[in-house]
Image (cartoon, rainbow, N blue to C red; front, side, top):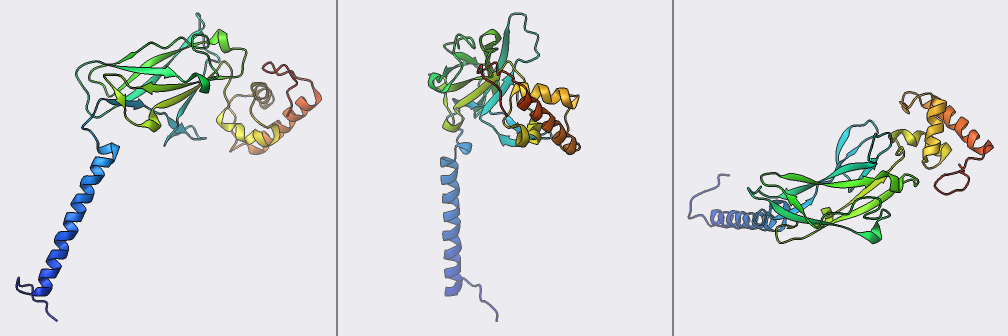
Length: 252
């Protein structure tokens, strides 16, 4: 059967109207999406957000997953003045500008175990987001002496709007920084956790001592890891080891 595509054909007219209506609907939907999706909103580019780090997998490879916290240790660092500076990155939304702008970062005290002015230096009243850059940073200066006798401390940082810069995304307006003077939990600890329980620096030291190296391979040497874990467990069960953080016996 041959379809008459002439303009006088009523069926063709109906089809044409349906196509036009569909196109109008698609255009309207695209326009609405660009207005509501913050990724497309570049009309107000005076906004910033924390640049979250990417998650590192068990093989030490960077993934595309973002994490809302930073884990940092001063263990093994030569710090003559006892201070270590961690640079916290932020990102601008939209186009760069050829002039400096001010932004503000505060500490959420009731959600932080670290004390401002004690465990880390007091934050400045405002920081400068420099001209012609898309990513900038400010220093978080850690004071090792204040937290070296505890396992770890943390601080929750929060962006606040200024006259120059607003907040781009609420979900990226805070960042937690976990810091310690001890060896942090290594990626391979999962191979020992079933036998030794949750991570502790003293357990780590004993595992490394028995294993004979800090380069531990939980994949290619799993049977030996199990052997080491049992030896370490027996050590802590048969010896009274005092946890320096709690003053109590460290138990498995």
